[in-house]
Image 1 (spheres, rainbow, N blue to C red):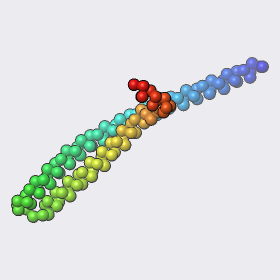
Image 2: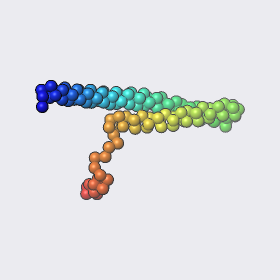
Image 3: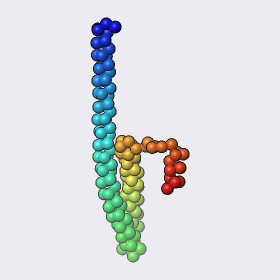
Image 4: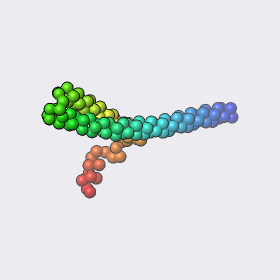
Length: 131
């Protein structure tokens, strides 16, 4: 083998190693970004759910008061109907937000590397039964 051919093989191998290292670094940075984005989205959604819980409780209380006023003859049916409509809208918004927080939790779990199985199903079952 001549020296030139050996040098070119060394340079080609170094280039492949550099490309593999760059690809690895890009993958790690993307994973960190995915986790960061997942945490931010989850926390924002959690805050939103907290606010919607308070809103739903307030609308339920307002509907209860409107119902009492209607039953006592203090108001007609329209304020009660409006309060119940507002309550139902708040409940629907809360349910949608709770579904979204679950979706965000799954995305975060996935970004953290979740979804793997450490052992074959039979082995995991055997280990669980042994405990």
